[in-house]
Image (cartoon, rainbow, N blue to C red):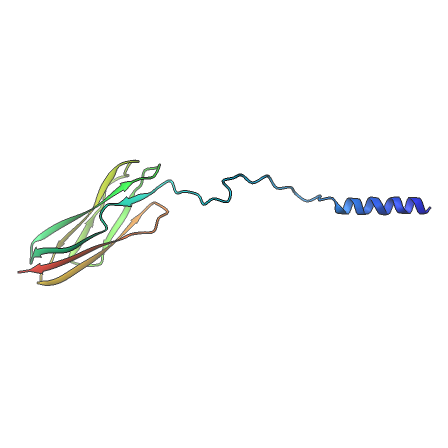
Length: 139
C-alpha cells in the first residue's frame, strides 16, 4: 500500500510543479523600444522677434514647417493670443517631404511693444508648438 501512496504523492507534486497556465509568446526585439511616430513636423520658424511695423499697417509673418514623417500631416487650427492678429493655415494635408506655412497677419492700432503667441494644433503625436511674435509698433 505504501508504494502506491508514494507513487500518487510523487505524481501530485509533479503535476503541481508543472506550469499549466497560459504561455506567453516570445517578445520581439522591438517590444522594449518606444514606437516612432509616423507623423512628424519640424519647424524652421518658431519666432519672429524685434520686428518693427507702423501703426495701422497690416503685416504678415510666415512660420514655415516641414513634414519629416512617413505619413501626410494636417494643421487643424492656429490660434493667436492677440486680438489684433489672425492666423491662416494650409487648406489640406502636407505630403511627406513637403513644406507649408502657418501665416500670422496683424494690424496694430497703437504704438508700443506688441506680442502674439500662436498655438498650433495638428494631427501628430507631438506636442502643440507655441509660435512667437515680438514687434515694436511705431507711428
